[in-house]
Every structure is written in structure tokens, then in C-alpha cells.
Length: 214
Length: 46
Image (cartoon, rainbow over all chains, first blue to last red; front, side, top):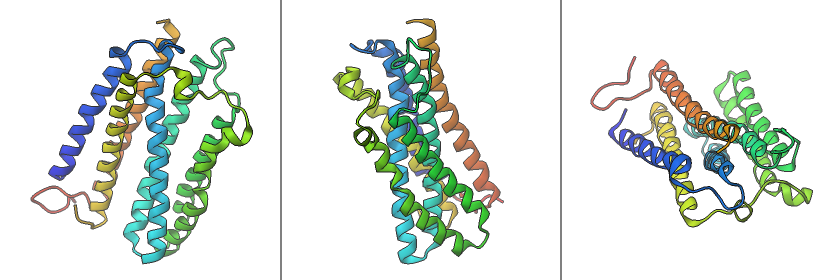
């Protein structure tokens, strides 16, 4: 492991530890949602990272189509895989958040709310992309197919964020409806920075393994 | 904090850090297996 990656990982661990301590213990309960809002600090950063990583998949796919360098295909695969991991975390923590807030009195976890349905659709798009990659053996064909799917599949990302507006209804709260205050946003920033650091370290490992520098 | 809410909060933290740590360990193992994982001052691991 390079020293840069060691520093990146150690910084991410420190930021993540501080963020987790803030989320679990240091912050006071929220005005509106009480204790349940603490799940937000694990769900929201994951959703943000999934979005960023799927955007990187799109960019790397376009760069592959332009340059035909398989290194960009490697970046597209790594970012899609990591984005899918964060999307999975978003879905799992999201159902817990929904259970403790929207559906508290009904003992429900999932009701096909527009944001739930569109996030699950996005998950299937990128799970499909990664599954398809395993089915194609020839590297150039795999990279080309993956890049095209990464470009068209990206439509699912803005659709997820627009789904509540398009559908015209959703129980998904906004930051205002949760009642977040400035110190709470500080903890959210720590968590986002930590997850971004871990993601950069993971992508650097893959880049270095593919022969890239630094 | 009610028992159920507390459990859900801790489970959320466990899901995030557990899956992320698992992924990083898997990636490290996967890249070593491909022979491309570089260490400073030496050749890639076999």
C-alpha cells in the first residue's frame, strides 16, 4: 500500500470515527424526528457517494469511448461496483429510517414510495451492468458494452432525485422537515468526507493495479 | 431513546461500516490475487 493511500485511509478512519461519534452520541435529538434522525447520518452520505460514483462511471465510460484505453474501463467498473455498494447501504439504512419515521405507527419498512422505487430501479441498473460485464469475456467488447450501458443507465440517477417531483408525492423528508441544525450538518460533512476518502483510496488501489501512476 | 429506535440506529451504523470494511478487505484480496497490488519499495505482490 502506498504512503499516500495509507494517509488517505487513516484520515478517512479518523473522520468516520468523529462523524459516527457525533451521530450516535454527541448531537442532541432533532426537533422534529427525535432520535430516529440519527440514521440520516448513515443513509444520506451513502446516497451522495452513490450518486458521485455513478457519475464517475458515466465520465469514465465516455473517456473509454473517446480514448479506447482499458484503464478508463477499469475506473468505470470500480466506480460502478463501489457506487452499487453505497446504493445498497442507502436502501438498507433507508428502510430502517422509513420504519422509524414515516411508518412508525404502521410497523412497515417499504411501501413503494417514489424515492424507494426509483432508488431500487437505480440499484438494478448498476447491478445489471456489473452482471453483464461478467458475461462478456472479450475485454474490448466488455468495455464498449459497459461504457454504453453506463451512459444510458445514468438516466436512472437524476430520475431518482426527480422522482418525488415527477410523482407529485412522497413521504421522503427534506432537511427542513427533519429539523437539521448547523452542528448536525457538520457531522454530515464529516461522514461524507470520510466515505469520499475511503472511495478515493479504493479507486486508487484499482488504478495502481491497472498500471496507472499515483 | 426507545429500544427499537436505538437498535435501528446501531444497525444502520453497522451496515455502513461493516459493508464498507468488508468491501475494502475483499478489494485488497482481489487485487493481490490479480498480482497488481503495489507496495512501496518493492514489486507487486505475487
